[in-house]
Length: 156
Image 1 (cartoon, rainbow, N blue to C red):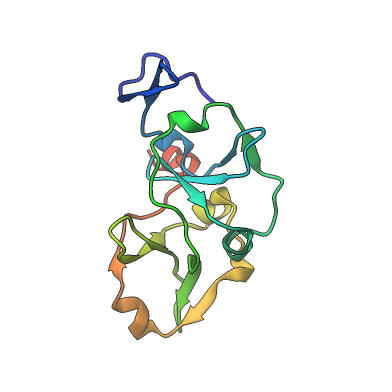
Image 2: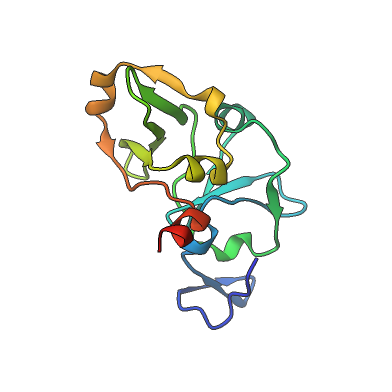
């Protein structure tokens, strides 16, 4: 992970030492782990989101080979957990894919994945996408699109 020194952000105190906590959109699409810790974090919208269980992990991803081990996990702003029920959905009769999540406010949100490249960069398993009635998808609150850092760089 890139060095965080000199990057603006919120300072926090952990064990008496100041630690910088920042949004990291340059890490969007990565799954982070920290040696000796059980949590897996997915980074999107510049924040790390804890994947709460192996069930949620297995609902979204097909492999574990793309985990990035870094001691700097705690320096990335923490967002809402990816809780039970988080999944990939596609409206009937359509090709678009959304990540379905629950926000910190408790609202369920759909996050549009605009390109196949972002789907691949995030490591989502396309075979795990659930077909749902389009009327159900239309009624969901839209969250920000999920664009990987690599895909965003290509679009510039």
